Length: 236
Ligand code: ATM
Image 1 (cartoon, rainbow, N blue to C red):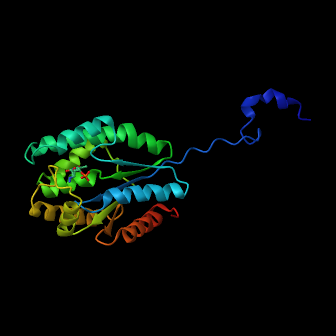
Image 2 (image 1 turned 60 degrees about the vertical axis):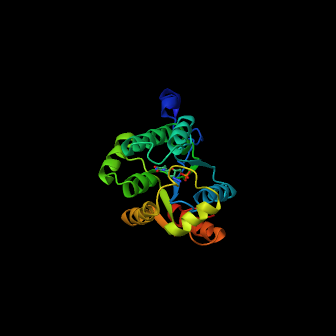
Image 3 (image 1 turned 120 degrees about the vertical axis):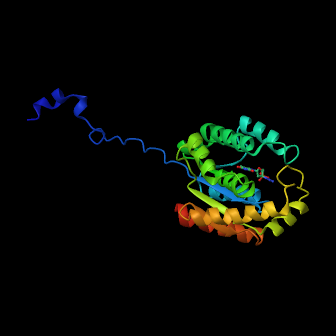
């Protein structure tokens, strides 16, 4: 007659018996990067995407590279000021990787673990494009550095804004934004950069989406939202 019900003690009582639900593990946030050359409109599009995610009830934060943490922002300052030959290419790559490691460990990974989506203005594809295709460092060496610093950590989605070098430079000049070390590099560099970003997108179609960034801002924004909806299964 059920006399030994008690003897089984609490160990026999699973959550179902107690009518308690185990807390749902907080779902991991997604990591989206927006990439592209000069004047591609990344910064505006990062802001618009974060606003759209939040409107859809998805907690999201914007960040940037190099930067995003106090150490990363300090590295940004020393990298961007001065003339374009100020840093040895390898030193430059190592500084960027140091900033990225700080960014991932202190801001990106903890945010994702809390369920917050992170949208970054530039990430690892910028290193492949600028230091690899642009400056000529070996892509294998850069991939090796990435593995050393970050293992297999990668964005869930990278939107690469494709803007012809000429258009991008004209836009950057119109913003009065020709002051930093990278923007003073020559036209051929920016052409290599543009081709490099296209190649990166073509080489990793599962992660990357190439979006024509030469169109007006609302059209580019809608195209980015469509890609995020389609790839990450949300409605924006
Ligand atoms: P923004 O201007 O997009 O904030 O980027 C800062 C510069 O840092 C950018 N050049 N410009 N102008 C590109 C450069 N950069 C690299 O060269 N490699 C990288 O890995 C990253 C993240 C940025």
